[in-house]
Structures are given as C-alpha cells and as structure tokens.
Length: 221
Image (cartoon, rainbow, N blue to C red; front, side):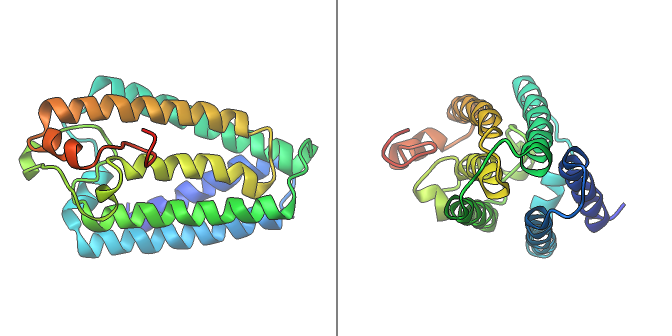
C-alpha cells in the first residue's frame, strides 16, 4: 500500500472520529481543518520521501531495539488521541457544552500551524527523527545540533504538545483540554525518559546537553 493511500485512510478514520460523535457532516471548521492538515501532511510526506528516503524508511516501520517503555507510552498516547477526537466531536459538534470565542479559535489555528512548522523544520535537519525511541546504530546515529535543536533538545515533542493543546481550541471544545493536559503529561514523561536514554547511550549527546540546556521550553525545562 502506498504512503499516500495509507495517509488518506488515516485521515478518513480521523474524520470519522470527529464526525460520527458530532452526528452530522455540516461542521465547516472540522472540514477546513482536515483539508489543510491533509495537504500539509501529504506534501510533507512526499517531501521527506524525495529528500531523505532513509528518514522516510525509519518513520514508516518498526525498528529493532525500541525501548519497551516507549511502546507503552505510544499506545497510551494513541488511546488518548482517539478519546480526544471523540470528545471534541461530542462537545463542539453535537452537545455544544463549550463556547470558544473566535479570537481563541484563531490562536488555536496559529498554534497548530506553528506545530506543523516545527515538525517540518526538525525533519529538515534531523535524518534520525524516528517515531520510536531507539538508538539507530545501523545508521550511524549521532546528536543533531542544528535547526530547532540549537534551542531545544526535543522540538518534536514541543510540536506534539502544541498540537494537543491547540486542536480542541481551534475546533471549539474547552472540555477536551482536560484530555490534552493528560497527553501533555505523557509527552513530558516521554521526553524525560528519552533524554535519559540518549545521555546514556548516544555518543556525543551528553556534550550536546551542555550547549542546549533545555528539553522542551526555553528558559524553563
């Protein structure tokens, strides 16, 4: 199955988790979000396939020596993601518990665009940007220090946290922010565990931590 087809199927399921709980299809904000997100994801996928086939291969399969705790964390995050989409659909699409002002929705949209930009920036400079926590010894894995990694050691996790926080705001659900908070806790935990793993196992990473002090938030942590 081609990457584009898999991506299309994923977005169809993504949309179903929003629209089925909503109970109707005339939800223009969700359609606009899905369309823009799909185009960005598709163009990004094609760009990575063309520019860095090794990275595309790394992110498309299950690598060896993946940390067991990471498999658990990824599973928990997927379940929370499904619950997040369903809750947004119920709240913003059907029951209308929340009333999110347009200004906040605009901020949510800008935050989502920022999260996509951070992801593409990280992929541009880091050929080792795996979706799994593992040391890629077969690929000559080493610390990457350019691009967003000059400022943060884990910009991808910041991107994911921005996404989790901004999606409910954009689509109009304050209630779903409770699940977003749990997802951010999971990402902070994953960041700490991955950082510890890299310091213990990845050549050059400990020296890199002396140059780039902060993991997720400049000036804080």
